[in-house]
Length: 382
Ligand SMILES: *Cc1c(COP(=O)(O)O)cnc(C)c1O
Image (cartoon, rainbow, N blue to C red; front, side):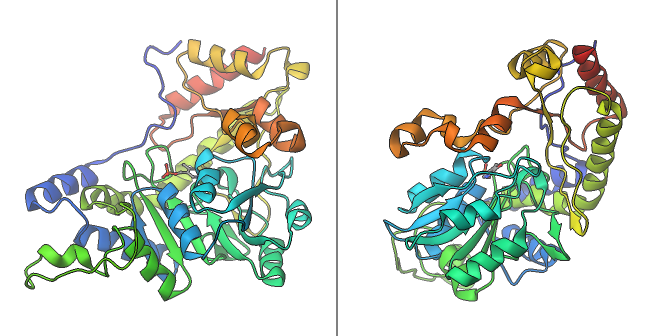
């Protein structure tokens, strides 16, 4: 057994970002400034997007996108029960009402036919999540959005590198929201980004992200002379710092090599676990690119003789950190109480949530770490 605990989702931090953080600190400009502007430019060109605004989390990105989409109380937004709570909370904070549509049991992504069935005269937006880095079925989802005049907001927290039929995730929708949280494919500590199709949406998000102060208020302490700012709406404190962008600029440069490393680990897991009585993640569909953010096993006690939670504990005992992505949203007491949701009403997400276990999948893993994960999993199931 390994001596040291293998932390789940630990990011790989390398010399260039450490040096950049030091340079940022020595420059004395820690807050929003030139490094944030550079990360926005770099990310925009990586994605081939029109507009990009950096913020301090994907949660902030989702919240501001929903506000910029013009949602009002009573409006309904359709999303997936197989996501992190932030997706649903952002809808509630925008004042709109979240509506769930169950996932496809194979892809674990929102099922477009169930989305269609959930559309009502109050529906104003769709908020699909590209779960685990696998792109959602964007052709039918875009078609539904077009036919019903709905805003489309993509939760790309898992899906920085994902593509669907030649187009990159985050560019299908009016808004694409990304996370650079410590466990995500590239990191800034806390951090996020919004891509928008329309200039006016990115301008509004920029204002909302900094107290509602007029454009470029952060320049007021620069050397071009003091500039007064005006508060033009009641905004939030969601701006990204240069200290955070300093990390992201260099992480983004290694995004492709990190992706290849995670894909290789994914393939080693697939080969090693092929004979086990557990369900492995579905292979990526043709003409798509998977971001390989999460590698999830489904542990069905009827087939394995061991339950999911017992598996999680057995892995931890073997010094391997594991994750759960996710208990379906209606399992949580808040949503049951506030919205009356029941897990049984979304049976595919409920079953996945009760059986799923995520294994470490990070470019930081050595070949030895990967072997330790494989040995632990095989040891538990045999
Ligand atoms: C991580 C995550 C978020 C929130 O990202 P933060 O940057 O931590 O706010 C939202 N949606 C999904 C699907 C996530 O995994």
